[in-house]
Each structure stands twice: as C-alpha cells, then as structure tokens.
Length: 294
Image (cartoon, rainbow, N blue to C red; front, side, top):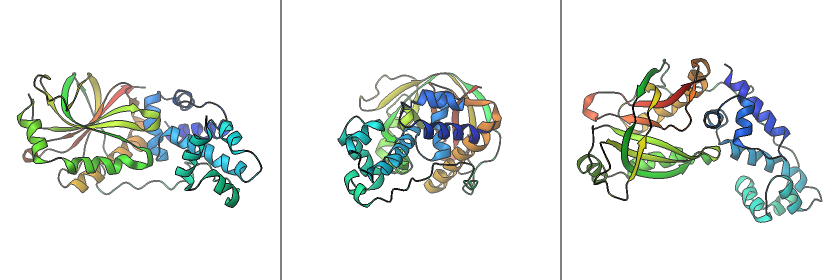
C-alpha cells in the first residue's frame, strides 16, 4: 500500500477545493482511511495537522489576491474566514505581518503546494527501530496521573512533552507510586486525542491502578478500553534525550514504513501510549499503538 500516494491525493484535492468546505472526514475518505488514522498519517508525512495545512494553503492563495484591489474582508470570506479579525490573526501567525501590510509589499507569487514525491526520503534518527511489531491483545485497564494539554501544531508537543517530563519531581512520582493503588512500577505516557484534525491532545504521565479510590481530585483518571496493540520496543532505555529521539524515530518508521505494508491502521477511539519500565529491570521502553485490520 502506497501511503505517500494516498496522502498526496488528498493534498491535491485540498489544492483544488480551497474555497469549499473541507473537513477531516471528507479528506480521510479521499485518502481511503478512517478520519483518526488519516489525521495521524497526514501529520507524519506533512509535518503539521491536516486542518493547519488547509489554513496555510488558503492563506497562500489569499496572498495572491492581497496584491490586487480586492477588499480584505471579501478575500477572507472567499477562503472560509468568518471575520476580518479571524483572517488577520491567522495571516499574521503564518506571514508575520498584517494582510494590509502584505498587500503593500507582497510578491504576489504563490508558494508551491507540497509534493511528497519530490521530498528526499527521510533519514531516521540513529537508533531507530526497524523490525516487525509484536501484536498483542490487552484488556481494559485504569490509569491515574498528571495531564498536559498540548498540540502538534508548530511542533509544539515535541518541546512540551520533554519539558513536562523534566518538570516531574520526586514528590510527583512518589505520589503516583506510593499513594495510589498502583498495580506495577511501570510509568506510562498516554495520548488522548481531543481534536485530531487540529493536532490537539492531552498527554498524561500516569501509572496503572486497580481503582480510583483515594486518587486526588487534581489527577487525571481514565479507563483505557481493551484493544489490540502493535508493540515496538525502543533500542534506548536510558537518558532523556536518547529516549526522546529514539521514540520520535520509531514513530516515523511506524507511519512511513510499517503501517503501509502491515494490513493494519490505527484503531479509532483507542489510546496509544509509551511504556517506561522500572529502571532496575533492564527492560526496554515500548510503544503501544492500538490497531485494527484494514
């Protein structure tokens, strides 16, 4: 299965329908994926959430019209912005100036659309895992821990999550391991999508618990549904930077190499997570991805 071709087909569709309503569901159907799986694969290939990409392309076309005589509010409405303020805010974020300033100084040249087939094949970070996943079934389980709300927009989560881990003190971990009804010593880093099309999700550092009795109200709690997982073992198990780079490389391998030939896709409504063993057990960090047969 050529994932690159399917994502490119949706990119081409976006380019031809920028003045129409575009939704995650419509674009996922063009690519032949479920919306949840499509949103994750799109980000892996393009480097930003799908609706952020749509906004960027709409703004790119808007720059062509800004150098003409058309009213800014009319341009905004043509490209799906309900107000002048909303358009100006989005425009400034991408181009670093107001639409009016751009209209006076802009080049009037359209930035080319993304062509995945012209991109140099990515090189994985040293230490990336190139192996088949272990497919395992896991029953439902409960977790409790600390929540971080973040997003993949502007690659923010790549900075937010390592910072979140560094902010965890000995007291934080003591509460998780000593004051909760913990079932084992492993720590989990779980991703709960809140708005997949825009890359928004909650990242939770947690432990598995038998129940929620006595869990402080400020902690995040959830029951993870039963699922079938593709499990990848990271080659790195010590050093924050080594673990972070190895996990990012493993994610890249999963989306660009493993998924296309696996016959699986991400299961909708499930939760993926990183599994960090007790440091003295000598086990590897693992990545659990909930999957279903295509």
